[in-house]
Amino acid sequence: MRLSGGQALEIAETICRTASGQSLSSAGSHVIMYGYIINPDSREEIDEALITIMRKPRSYTREDIVEINCHSGIVPLKKTVSAAIRQGARLAEPGEFTKRAFLNGRIDLAQAEAVIDLIKAETKNSCDLALKQLKGDLSRKTESMKEGLLEVLVNLEAAVDFPEEDIEPLERKQLIKNLSTIIVCIEQMLEGAEKGMIYREGLKTAITGKPNVGKSSLLNMLLRKERAIVTPIPGTTRDIIEEGLNVQGIPLRIVDTAGIREPDDLVEEAGVGLTRKTIEEADLVLCVFDQSQNLESEDMELLSITKEKKSILVLNKSDLSTKLREGEVKKLSGTRPIVRTCALTGAGLEQLEGAIQKLVFDGGAKGTEDILVSNIRHVTALEKAVGFAREAEATLREEESEEIIAMAVRESLTELGRITGETTSEDLLDRIFSEFCIGK
Ligand SMILES: Nc1nc2c(ncn2[C@@H]2O[C@H](COP(=O)(O)OP(=O)(O)OP(=O)(O)O)[C@@H](O)[C@H]2O)c(=O)[nH]1
Ligand SMILES: [Mg+2]
Image 1: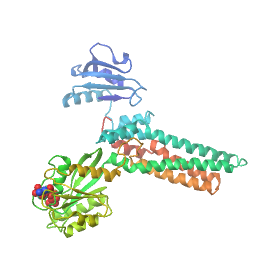
Image 2: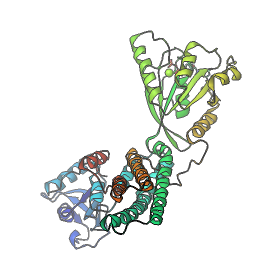
Image 3: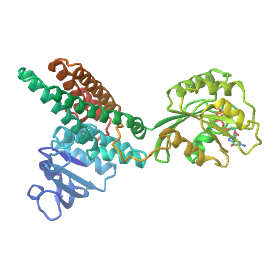
Image 4: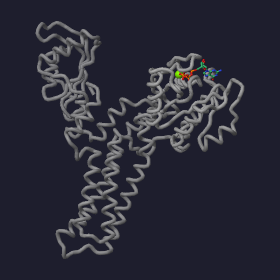
């Protein structure tokens, strides 16, 4: 249990008894004391505990913090919490500790967001990325771009305030150069954002194909567990099954779908409808075929509706004799990668995972060594910031008045400020911190 705020020590004092008899308020900072949690009214012991004291400002929230580590279990925990509440504490809102850390200036908004990303990260790469953001990499880069813009702004404003000292052509050139550097920097960040967002949110992957080709079997193979029901009866999967999966460090949100065909009944019809929607929303589609059968109209339809999508053709049932010749499939697939699998034995699993990795990250660096923007909120801010910076650059070239140029630069600064939370609204804060769980 964690208490934060001006009364944290006072409240903890009333519900804890240290073994040494020393009072919490007389203890220093960053100390751990051994003792018991007690009922403040009856003085009865509730649980054995270690009590950690972190005095402001050297704490997570920059407020006084007391953390009580006990054996817990639902009954002692409830008793402890209710004792603290009776003494004047209240339950924290979701993410409130991190929100206070932000409001008290210990971390900025991008760092606060990284805390939740770190908690939710499902692969090591996602985790590394969140940790870098938490340590302030993104914030520092944003800050340095802001400094660049500010320098431009100062020059422009000087010209506005002292019109007789018009900006020299040479100076204009330098300002254009400064702006271009910032624009390129933002553009590079935006380029990496697709990758960053995949690490943060997971790659939405849909497994699709005719009934009975082995979609659910493939899902189970990729998950290495029996998750979806597999039967020889076509039309087994009717609902959408979604699971998280780690493919060579890339988090996938993988969805098994109902087979595409003319539905027999209403339930199946609903399933097929959902499948189409899933394909539309997917970042990656695995198109599954039964290579022991000839292609049918449903297969052709699948190839056609996924033409514009990032997709991999999976020729399943490779243990059975081949009817689908590679050449024929190649002609239909265009440039899409093709992988042969046997979902019964797991043959081709590595090739499939390799193809996914290659397709998503173009075979390029899969590491997280660069600063990767991973949050749609940051992407939006960067897009707007670069838009205004381009506008400023263009108006500078066109020798517009300093005031007009300065306006665009200021807008760009405001947008960059949104990333670190310098410019923000109460609504936005509520939305961000509501994603947290209580106690973080
Ligand atoms: N021989 C062979 N059989 C397979 C393979 N993969 C799946 N099967 C069999 O094919 C049948 C259908 O498999 P499912 O995984 O249920 O196929 P599905 O595409 O999910 O089918 P629906 O949900 O009905 O659309 C089952 O009997 C599986 O055991 C394979 O690689 N080789
Ligand atoms: Mg199925």
